[in-house]
Image (cartoon, rainbow, N blue to C red; front, top):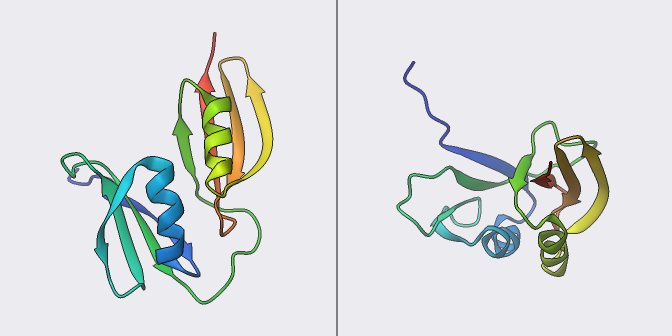
Length: 119
């Protein structure tokens, strides 16, 4: 096999505006901007990490995302509050024996989760 995950692309009505949320949420920077039609965000590190792409689409999101980001942290409650202050909408929190996660939506309604493991 000769494949690696290059990135995850999120459909967006306004990629540049949505980039403002995701750059702050994940401490990323814009590394490519195709005139606002496609914006690529990467870590401030060496560039080998998975990128987040924001792609302009005409249609609005309907229904639940079929793919979403799962973000991990040791401080789920703190990160959820921080992301809410950046413009995320907080949804339900779920728990299983080894993990608690909260479902959120970015400013355009794209769902993502913030989870933290526990014993």
